[in-house]
Image (cartoon, rainbow, N blue to C red):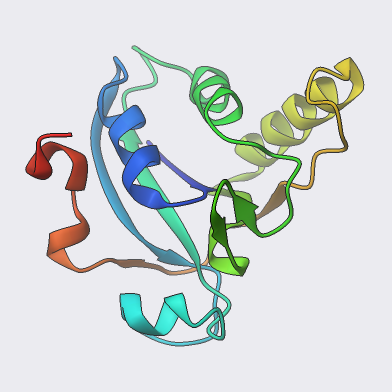
Amino acid sequence: MKATFGAGCFWHVEDLFRKTKGVQSTQVGYIGGQLTNPTYEEVCTANTGHAEAVQVEYNPDEISFEELLDVFWKNHNPTTLNRQGPDVGNQYRSAIFYHDEQQKDIAEKSKHTLDESGTCGAPIVTEIIPAPTFYKAEEYHQKYFKKSGM
């Protein structure tokens, strides 16, 4: 099965998911914008509308979508609009791009539960939207932390 998340710079997010049991593969790329086949340089202008994202292929017999959401929520700040740490721009927004109605329902329930718990200290601004076309990022971005020894 497939899941797609935007949580700031995709290098860190990809590394976390790649190391998660039950995840079969990951790729980083761009999603949610109006330009076909955007480049990193174009997305970095914050004018294309794309988010940096990681697309995860996972085995639902080994890991559930809920467990993937736990990794997502715990490893970025879902309360900052268009920002993660020092990275600022709409390409760094917090987003869950769902692939079916079941993922949508699970994501909305998860977001609501986390928001109501108050543990984030501020309202959650994470978008939950249908997954449009995902454009794979340039090869040098794929598994960046692994390639660079980080």
